[in-house]
Image 1 (cartoon, rainbow, N blue to C red):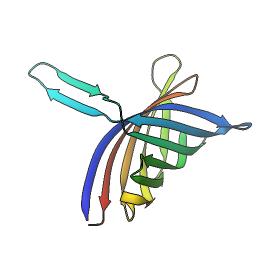
Image 2: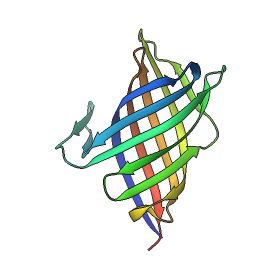
Image 3: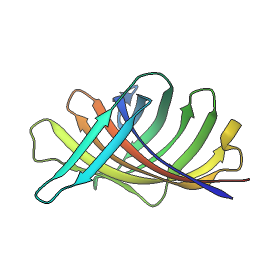
Image 4: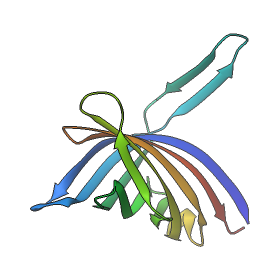
Length: 149
């Protein structure tokens, strides 16, 4: 097996399905990106550049619970390379952010299936996200996948 680790920041929306405010459909996309982190003597600097090109697409179904937790299942398509299917490992959580009109949250997803380059993939994707009151989402994925040789 070989390990593939990467980070992508997705942008899009999460909206209620039909008349059910407890079920959301999330759809986001990400283009090619380069993340940089420099720990200096007196500050930490982070950069994100997006040269364009390649695109990943994310789609999921989120079931919200009264305690602020949620369950999620979905698929991420990495351009023409293939897809991974996932489900929540444990529970995801959504909290107030301390900023008006913005919630924040996090979740671990277990990769359950892959296609194309990702056939036989296993691994975990960490999602750290925010959702605005209008449904706009910013979602940063940190993926560690294990692929057959």
